[in-house]
Length: 324
Image (cartoon, rainbow, N blue to C red; front, side, top):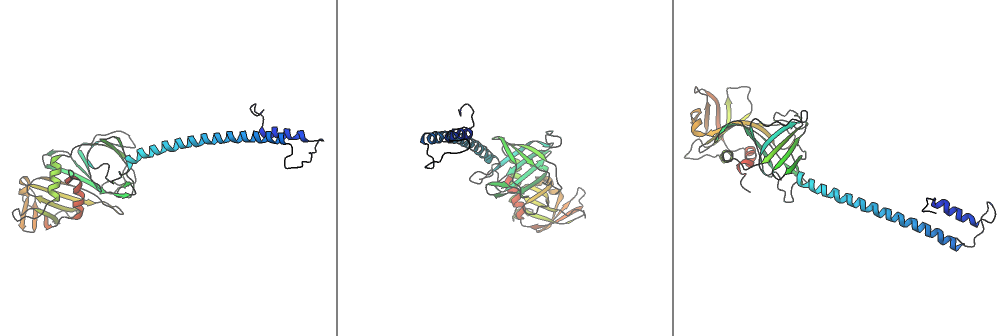
């Protein structure tokens, strides 16, 4: 009866009505359930129903377990994309070059006009770009920021988890959102960038290695770090440095961007062989340097200083890219 679709409770109630001696009256039972065959039949029906419910619950539990396993696999796959490995090494550590950039408005992938290199170590990112280069001679732009760890997730300078995925072992796609900031500290568009892993360019590594290790030497009076003290441009209040090391010269404009906490910056400059730029430099004494224009007129004055910690941190990803 139950297999034919009869309601279980209605069917059992009909069986009990067999026990009625007169219409509307129940017989008096000497025990809790006096008619043993009927009692056993109803118990059997309920037991069978309970077994079916158990089987259904077991099937539901098995389905739930399969879903949990699938979700765990997805989370595990995501963890190697957006999280640090167990040894807390940045998964993007190394050198990358930009393939294309796109904003969410147009969705069009645009190839950058200038060469963009991204250098990562375990705590800092440096983006270096230039349009034309001949050996170590080039004009360039830089930007970068520091990273911290929150649990096993990499967090950028503004406190947000990084958003990147790896289509393959040598490609990364990163996303930057509208409430992030551009170099000038102005809210920027939502953009997507694709980068490919490459071997670092030897000339660029040489420039940053020379800059980060610039220090005074008795046999090379220009060597060391110089900070600007005067300029003819009253509107220019940025930090400026000259870094000289043997045959390498770098002039750098440094602009820290507005971050509540953390390390973020942007800048630009030029670098090249000292022999090509020495005619624009005049050392007035051991600790003072002047930068001249093509007519020999003083444009800026510098004094000798020690290497600032923020330059050390900014240049380290490129300068020591080949070192563990």
